Length: 412
Ligand SMILES: *Cc1c(COP(=O)(O)O)cnc(C)c1O
Image 1 (cartoon, protein in one colour):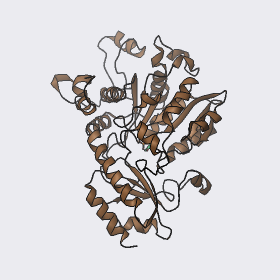
Image 2 (tube, protein in one colour; image 1 turned 90 degrees about the vertical axis):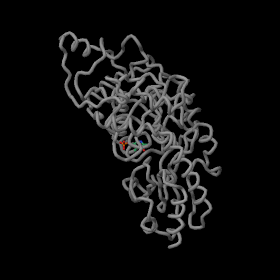
Image 3 (tube, helix red, strand yellow; image 1 turned 180 degrees about the horizontal axis):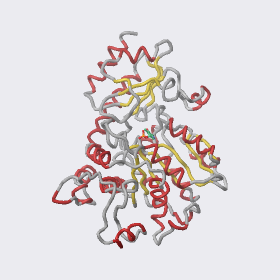
Image 4 (cartoon, helix red, strand yellow; image 1 turned 45 degrees about the horizontal axis):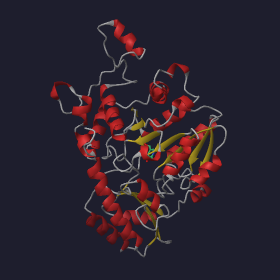
């Protein structure tokens, strides 16, 4: 399996990594919450971590474990934990690893709900500094004696700023900072998190990974690059013989088991089915997005286009270095005077919806929806204009997408 290509490994993963029973090619979905031990010593050994096994559906299931194996394999890590949603994964990581008095350097350009979660963390006494992560210098300047981690997104949504990933990863490694990367926008076929020294990747499996807008999920993968023995927030009971597993063990116990946002067996199965076509979908989306970005860039009724694949994008050089595709998120500002709501109503094929990574092309007005709770000054800081539209490009035939824009623009 090791030297096979990405999709070959992926579509054979259940069969070869998870070894389902009876020659089944897919991992079976089993909804049992409880697990019987014919020998009572077995339940003791599983509780004490001396033997692998499942004891209760909130903590683990065969379906979630199978998906975790696949995700970890694709990332080349030391283990993965899955959650009911991407936000559950992020919350579990933050709440299980940090405490009041810790300092975390956080990207200025964050998914809206993560930004809102950050405010909750601050209210609990965790100190945060928001910085522009497109330049490592800003991270260096924000670092203090109590800094424990850096948290950022690879490509930010909706303005598509690209983080200075390798330089920040290197700086984190040199200073024993945990480097947490939300790689939702850049799944592992597009971005190798280990190449930028990420410690943990978090991802919304709801988006590109599952890909069809029919299931929610989230994950955390430990790349194995961080030395957990330098991280003093690991509780004594989770300091087992192998320190590479300390972080994930604490996330699994304190974050998943205690907080309880468990991925259901059916959802795990749906995600692994969607995952099989990840490369086919993302290649098509990237191609469509590049085509639309070029079209919009040259359109007289558009004032700005934000897409990392464009040579004019301020971090195009970073995107080219770190990713094997420029992603499916593309935003643009309509000329002043064109109402974004009226424009969205004029699009016939493109769906007005707040989701991304779907097979269908989606669009929404940004400032008045996902950033509705954010103050006007903060929106300016984040580069979000009032007439901005965010698109999530799907896998439709690209001529049809361009034609839909043509007919919509012709009405203004
Ligand atoms: C959607 C998203 C999340 C949250 O994921 P859910 O599965 O919706 O909870 C987190 N980070 C990014 C970058 C996202 O796009």
